[in-house]
Image (cartoon, rainbow, N blue to C red; front, side, top):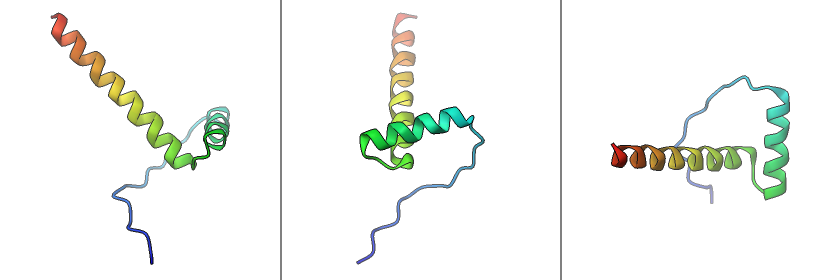
Amino acid sequence: MARKKKDGEHINVYVDRSVVQRLRNYAEEKGQTVTMALERILTDFFRKEDEATADRKKEA
């Protein structure tokens, strides 16, 4: 049985080779695909940004 398709979108970015290699190494160390690693990294980054923004609004 085929897997359900992910609700996603393709993106095309040009990234410095050293950053790409670091991402590949990270994904391999974690046992993840590069896509999965990048999604988790970005999700965590945006969650932290949202929290920081909410904290700044509370202080204002």
